[in-house]
Amino acid sequence: MIRRNPNGDIPVVHESAFVDPTAILCGKVIVKENVFIGPYAVIRADEVNDDGDMEPIVIGAGSNIQDGVVIHCKAGGGVSIGKDTSIAHRSIVHGPCTVGDHVFVGFNSVLFNCVVGSRSVIRHNSVVEGCEVPAGFYIPSATDIHSDADLARIERVTPDMAGFSESVTQANMELVKGYKRIRNEF
Image (tube, rainbow, N blue to C red; front, side, top):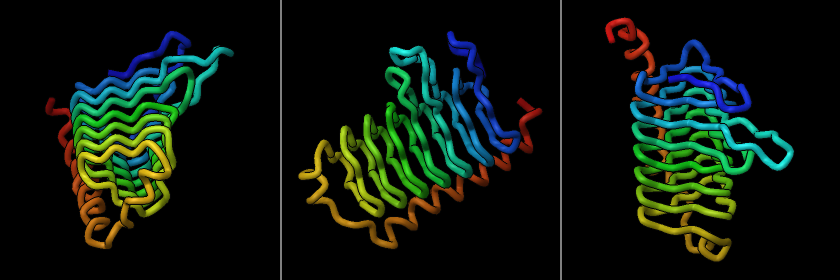
């Protein structure tokens, strides 16, 4: 469902993107080329800052927002998801937040008020809050990151770990094509 927010902003979705009919996109949301937005995802840009303004939620080209993901912004803060990035099932990305290109965010993870550098991997059930994850980091499953001290114990992403992220992105790019081909059958 595509709908306006109270300010009257309406999502802008590139014609090559696929948005599942059960997903909700509300407000100042920009979805770029070849994006996959899965069932029951909620992407909502509707809160304003003290001046009545808000930054958009931008989903970069070739990215996938999987089943049950929630993306929202607090007090007008924006969210930027880079290109070819995977946000896996039931994760929460709450702005202000910036996620780089070629990032993998695992199942049930939470990102809030943070920056995640390109080519990083955040495995399942992890929390990243109030800090900046440099490019190319691997955060193991069930890890909480809240400071630079927490980041100091995190290892760099290996090529094998990065390859997993790229395979998820490629699989979801194929889903965009397939679902767009059969969309009139729903």
